[in-house]
Image 1 (cartoon, rainbow, N blue to C red):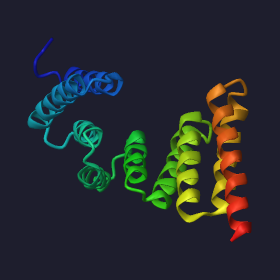
Image 2 (image 1 turned 135 degrees about the horizontal axis):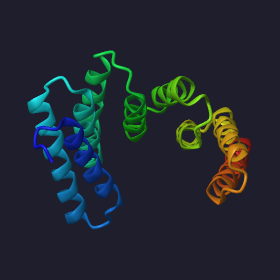
Image 3 (image 1 turned 90 degrees about the horizontal axis):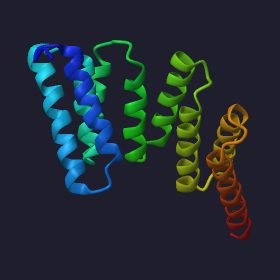
Image 4 (image 1 turned 180 degrees about the vertical axis):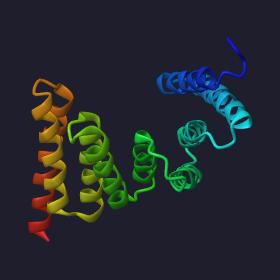
Length: 185
């Protein structure tokens, strides 16, 4: 491998990021995140304006739990006006972790429409989750209904998905509990 091949270095950074996500032991996860950071950092030293390496570093920072820092990094990358499909999704994930659900929902929906023709089940599920968390935090029937709507869209695309069936059942149970709590007040 050419040690200056940017694509290879980016791919190695992404490989270590994926490894870190699958790792359950904190020591090994931390080591994989460190390695991913090293590869992305090398790309940025070779190409200081590489948005994919900057995005990778921001993801590694978020994976470490530094969500405010990751949010700032993602926002700076977005200011470069490059059309990177996962950038908005990564920022939305970070906003969800920071309980900024409304902003996350907007970004998820923009990415779903612009890059995935409203048919990506993972993003539909992310939108449903953000609405679900927003509904729980604000005790909102309307947002719980929106959560249900997005899981149903995902279930329509993958009708035999046990994950989506479970999510829909959970939302319906929480919806019933929310209605019961609101009517008893």
